[in-house]
Image (cartoon, rainbow, N blue to C red; front, side):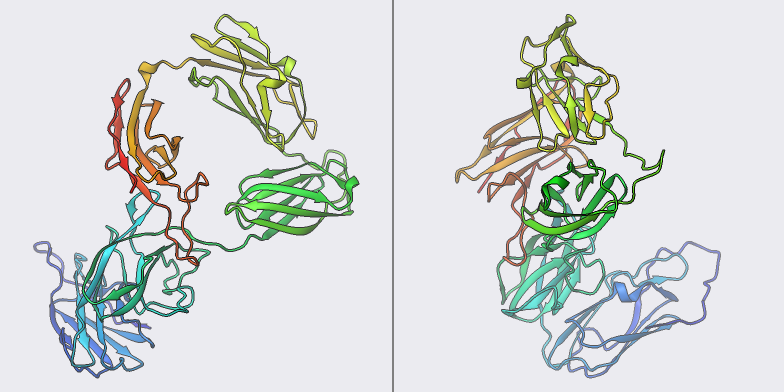
Length: 526
């Protein structure tokens, strides 16, 4: 509870105040022993404002009760509803709670330590918290020390000691008693000191800490370890479509229609949804299906679902979704001689296509035929890769796809499409390379990232790697030790006490210019 008083306005005029408020009195005194009171006073040498004390003030060990704050002109009084524990050292860190009234200068590093017994505990635990995917420090993460227990669960148990990280990701938990602890770091967005796996990220110190001396330089990587099972969030139907939204991202989907005559076309749309097309034009009838999806954690979720399309639309009603095609590379983009090919992605599955209509030309405008062996469709027929054999171009490639080449399951047609691509000139690009020392022959992959940490290129298990045809710009290089060999980074598992897979970064930003070759970006895998 926060009690307020009348606003006090500091005098105006004169030299600007640059000094932070100074403590003139604090009860109990810092480093006091045998304190048995329930009230703490802190007074400054000038009028102060109190900024969000419930969020700023951290008290360790964690309190069993609560406290009220009474605002005073030059300080505050904290009154606790329960006595402090016997023979326990308490530490109060006020962080940025107190500011002067005029210039808002912060009274920094205000800490109060006292003991309810004759001894003040003096051990310290410190370290740094990072986001492993960017290697950047994370601010305001709650790093908690939990008294060891076989049944310890950070989802249900609050830490005994805790401290939030600063803007550099650094934390220091002081005045800790010797003992046996587990340490977890939680982003704690709801500020309840419990791990909410649906909303928060967590970091693990794998080994139990037996604290006898100071523990320093801990490195904790915080990541999303949420393992909540997949489930259906929503089913939406129109006269033309049924949409099923899931909690987790989907990698693969299979639908079995209980009555085979009800079989319809379906596809995955977006990361967490599937769409079923009412290709049989069945209205106000219930269709039963069994759906199996593989989620982003490679787990299978199977469920029975009833679908009922809305009534048959009247004339000019029942609007269909748009039908579009995206191409890679996009029109005008340079192409690489090593891999001259196209990927076409459609917003609806394709029912009919005519390869004879496609005009694929190299340099001289002599047409190269596209045949069945040159194309590869995905399972849902929403993506096709085309790579034509033949003489490689010297200057450019041109592709023409006339209207009617691809027809969707709803009889939409692609529009006329023309795309021209110059062959890449190496002088307009740069190269970045390095070497991996991997004495234990672990599986790994190396990624080239842009400034937004998006993957530009990737190589797998190549000891002497090279990223070619890289545009001028700022980059990072990231090496991931793929412990389970699944080709992706795994963020760890709280239940199994597994930390995220190891990520190593190039030490600095890489500034690449046109026609430059940068080398020496080496890594060692222990």
